[in-house]
Image (cartoon, rainbow, N blue to C red; front, side):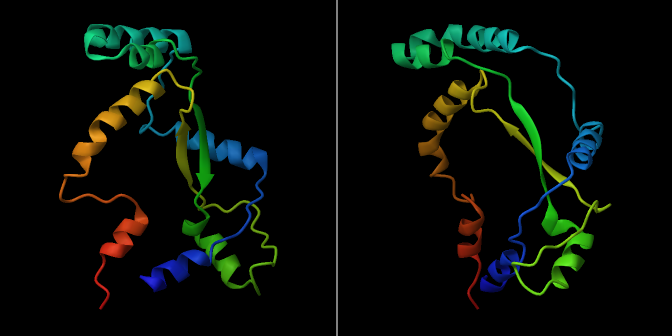
Length: 160
């Protein structure tokens, strides 16, 4: 696994991207049929979460109920992280660089894709998600075949 780690270290670069190029890449990703456009405001989503948990009020402590029911919320933020490690154009430009400190100019690579990120720190479902995580965590530890993260996977590989 050290070779995989060394391979990953090659791509530690700062990416400065033209905002119009970034926006067009994100919009083209969202126009893909894989994504479903859901029109819902924050108040409606909050009401749906509150309606969902009402039948379970007898199973929750007062503080648990209030954490879910009375949280301040806002809708999720969507953005994309450029997958610079998968772009052949960027990879080629990086390989011809003379070191990590050299600036690599790869203006608008045609093969650059984005990893979609939905940040939900203040979403109406955040507290409910946190509670479910807390409840299920002891059971997940008992599952025989699970990976916690990439490092857990790398540690599980044979050393030979």
